[in-house]
Image (cartoon, rainbow, N blue to C red; front, side):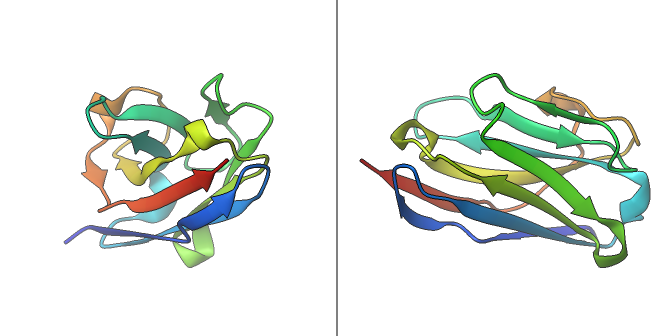
Amino acid sequence: QVQLVESGGGLVQAGGSLRLSCAASGLAFGTNAMGWFRQVPGKEREFVATISSSGIGTYYADSVKGRFTISRVNSKNTVYLQMNSLKPEDTAVYYCAARSSPWNSAARREYNYWGQGTQVTVSS
């Protein structure tokens, strides 16, 4: 059974930083591209960042480019999202997702497994 467990969310002031982690189990982690998405109430879940299975390829939403960094440690079955210079509009539930392909993707429909999410709140 595949499990993705996010951690690291919380409350932070604008301009601050957080690092999210996603621990994966039940899959061949080193063969899966991974992604981070976020959602606020009443809106669709939106793409944030993605990383290929090797960790070489990354891609970001324009809204977070230059502020967020996605990375992974395959030996630990873990993917990270380092979030710097946080803004109130970054407030959302952040979800980790795994794709049954080594290639990264920004398309929500192309991800096969999802975590339960972790809340990030940025105060102004």
